[in-house]
Image (cartoon, rainbow, N blue to C red; front, side, top):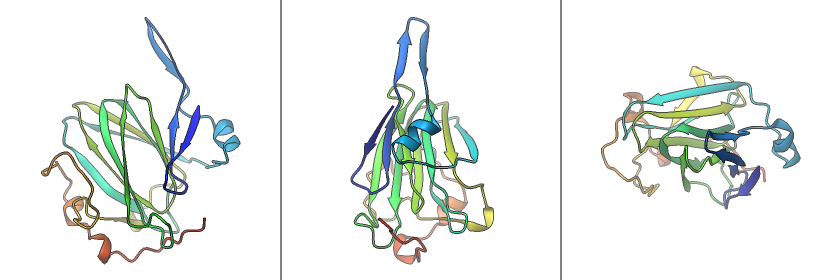
Length: 185
């Protein structure tokens, strides 16, 4: 398992080692010991699984506010997504910038997202299974988000009319969001 740092402090691409043969493959998607050895000691408390039937489903940009903020380890078990995170940590050298990465059932890549980031993904294939771990339980009272199409973010989405939930249609722009997250790095 490799942990590849990005230019965003605390944001890592996780590349598990896959063993493939004519039967299929095996991979270890998470090892607490290996993560801790890399200095990434998260206490994941919940696993989530989201299924999207069609391409073009966009979920996000979502986050939970303190005291229920979450770090996430995200991956795709079936299909392909464009995964996007937005740094909301005031004082961070990458504050207000987004990072994108394609995750799929072919590349096996995962993204370890620290607290203080908003997260979204766009399904690129039908029948997509998106799986993620979080280090704090879901807390509806602390849900927040940023508009996926905020022009100030300059996110290069590959389509302009995704399938959205009603709540994702009315999220505020970044300039209207008072971030409680402070960069401590």
